[in-house]
Image (tube, rainbow over all chains, first blue to last red; front, side, top):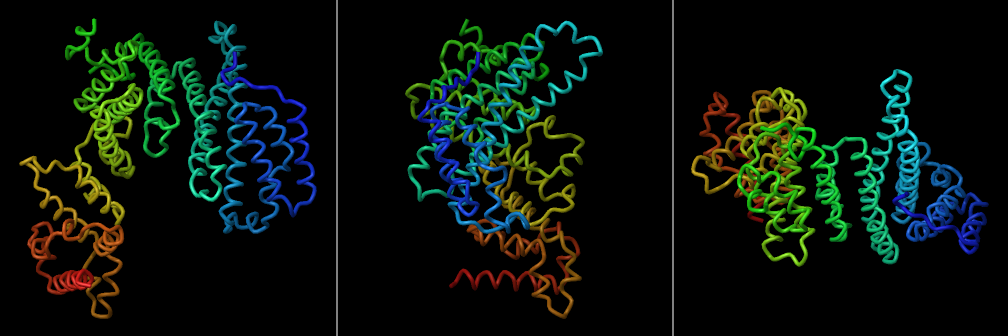
Amino acid sequence: MQLLQQTATTDEDRSKINAIDWLVFDPSQRAEALKQANAIMRMFVGTRKLSAARDVFNKLPAGSYRSHHPQLEKTGNVDLCAEDENAIREYLCVKAYLDANDGFNDWFEHYHDMKPEKPAMATGANFTERVAFEHRQKQYENELERWRHTLMMQTKDCERDMTRMHQMRLLRQLCLPPLCFLLHTILHSTEQLNKCLQLADVIASEQYKLYQVFQRAELQKFLQKLRESSIALLDTGCDALGYKFE
Amino acid sequence: LGRFLQTSENQHLSWLHDVNAGDFFQAQSTLQSLAAEHRTFVAKKKTLLSLSKLAAYAVEDPPESVHSNIEAINRELDLILHQEQLPQDVVEGLGTDIDNMRVLSAKEIIDLYVGEFNVDANEFDFMKALDLLQFINKEDEDVDCEDILTHIWCCAILKDDWSEISRPDDPFENCKDTVFFKTLEMAYMDGLDLTQCLPAVDRLLAAEELGSLRDQVSFQFLLRAGYEHLEQIFDK
């Protein structure tokens, strides 16, 4: 059971992916390659073809967004035109998004493979594994947080390209709520129940305005999920938000 | 069951029931009133408000009251944000951390921003204090807004050693770097109404908090000159 279903890559997709090869050939065209690759990845993420998006991503040489701006390499700070800067940000966001999904799949696999061994957990042998597991999970959370943050930032400042803006808004609506549900699943199944409830703080915050990308039905479903966490908390002898009774 | 849960002892559970029954309107209002009563942990109050806000957006065909509730919730969350942003030294000075902090009133937060715990207070802290004034309940007879305002500016004045500044070489140049004038400049740049958020110069000079500084002729001179300069700007 994977919460983010994927769609298979078709031959037509394949030829789109391969088209990028022509653009990465000449280093001076990197900026254009990045923009075209972004546009294709945007479409793939939108149609849930994550592995196809990953293929496009792998076509771009690592760090290619830096190579056509030698100054960026040196100082880390250079005035790019808004268009280039947005393209780079989008590229980094797609990377964070793909990594977050891979992270979840790894986590998911790991979590379920771990489960049968749970009784053995008490013995010392599995301790390192558990630490590694917690570490990975932490990384996932961080990545997700970072991704969210950067995605929030990049929707600003791009009024010139209305199609892109529209696509970005749809992507936010498509990707962010499921990620929140995934994060809830992780926190709930690892019994970090009070953190589940604190997800409400993140989603309701005016800084990120995540609640705006939720459809009403999704919010209702999310509140149901939080209710489940609350009830689990009550079973541990805390109040509904995980605090000691006053 | 619904009525049993609405009694005051069981209210903290009733929203769970409402969410399950799909009555987000009721859940929203219960969560909001739970948040209003809660004093012990600011983090818990925040989560109650957040849940209430999400419930508000989950209501089908929300009536007008829900929108005004969301506005009220955002105001409360704003106040909590000010508390969360208190400098870490100040919070540690109280012997607590943000996870275990109780709910503070707007006046308490102001006092922490401008008070002695905040050793490194700069113009940003004083601007936050001024911003917090909007959360002070003006109808409350125990609280005098004017007094708080005077207190904030007195604390800003006391951040600098004025006998150093009023050295004869270039007093006005030295003045620019005081926390008091930097705050003033920032407030002006931010478009705050200085006639509202700056007490009259005589009221400031009458404040006992300033201690012996009040009697220093050079300090009085600099302060009055600063005020005159401001008035000239406003006349233009």
